[in-house]
Amino acid sequence: MKRKQRSKIVPLILPVLYIPMFFSLSAHLVSGTEASFHDYEKRSITIETASVFPEAAQETVEDIREAYEQAASLYDDIQAADHSLAELKESVQEFERAADVYESLYEKALHAWAGQDDIDYVSEALMDLDTLHMEYAKMDSRSLQALVEEKGKAEEEEKRQKEVEKKKAEQEKAKEQQEVQGRKETEVEKEKEKSPSQPSVETEQTEAEAEPSHTENMETEETDSPADTETTEGELQEEKEKEDAS
Image 1 (cartoon, rainbow, N blue to C red):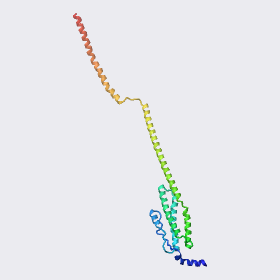
Image 2 (cartoon, rainbow, N blue to C red; image 1 turned 135 degrees about the horizontal axis):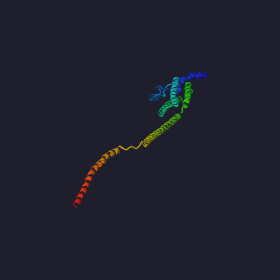
Image 3 (cartoon, helix red, strand yellow; image 1 turned 90 degrees about the vertical axis):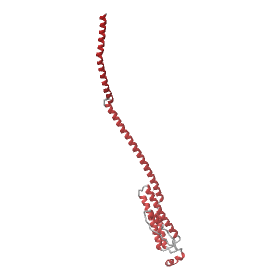
Image 4 (tube, rainbow, N blue to C red; image 1 turned 180 degrees about the vertical axis):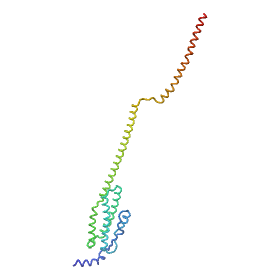
């Protein structure tokens, strides 16, 4: 009975006994882009001289829940998807911005409702936030940074391995080309050994040019022979005439 009377009196004395507050969160959550985070970060809790109504408290909880869900969605996506290092870094940065928005709204709500947990709807709102924050605490931002480091090392190792494979392929190609060239040279040498030696064209031309000269010499010798014979006969005739004169 006393509790019922108290509940009727409390709404009447709240404006007098407590500092009036009003929570308004501007803008709505929009996921996916840098602009959406910019708009979302404009959402803030403004304390004004007004009564704390149940609807305002519930709206505050829902807005904080949306901020949590945005951060949780990004966190799960990072954990599940196979991103490149650049994509992973960008996703982690988006998560950190969403997490900052959630923590800011959460801390402002706790500060604004401090000392008012004896009001039923404020107490209920605080319980909802406690449950929500326990779920948020399960998300470990340090594990995301560890993922970034691991991905960076993996990509560096993959790059190094590709360089090694490329260098190995180039060496094998060069070796193969050398082997092909060596086989060609060996085949040429074998062909030379099998084929009989042939005089060169220049040698044949030289011999052909030399043959006419030899013939001319022979003709000259043949021409000189009768002259030599005539000379000998003349000498014999002269000697005979000398003998007769004697």
